[in-house]
Amino acid sequence: MLLATYRKRERNGATAVELAAVIVVFSMLMFGILEYCMIVFTMNVVENGAREGARYAVVNSSDTTVVTDTQAYVLSLMDGLNVTDAPYACNIYLADSTGANIGSAATPSSGSTSVAMCPSPMCR
Image 1 (cartoon, one colour):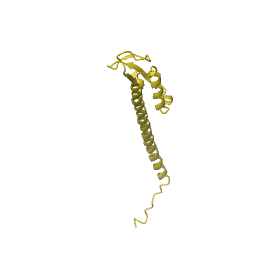
Image 2: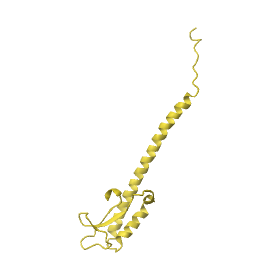
Image 3: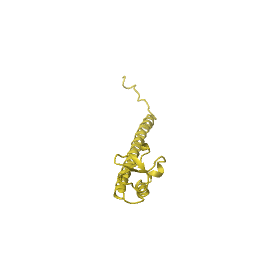
Image 4: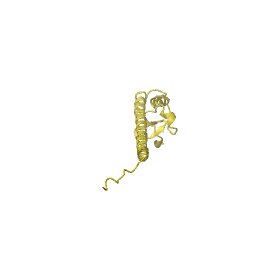
């Protein structure tokens, strides 16, 4: 007899509220993952540009315009990130055997043929 008087409670709208809560959490998680992927992509592009730019500068170290040519080559590898990331700067300088900056002259001085490169704004 007690079972016959039990009525199912109506839950109109409860599913919509639960769905809204789940969608908010899911979308925040999804955008967080996408943002992290963009950071990793940017790091990989900058590292590849630095590696390829250093290789280009070492191979062409006897060229009189090695600094400007290397900067142009690195910027061509950046996939447009140098435009979207405003603080980005491609700094190339002549270095001695210890890596110390000896200037940005286009012609290497005697005994210093290595070219160091740091594309990150953190290296300034």
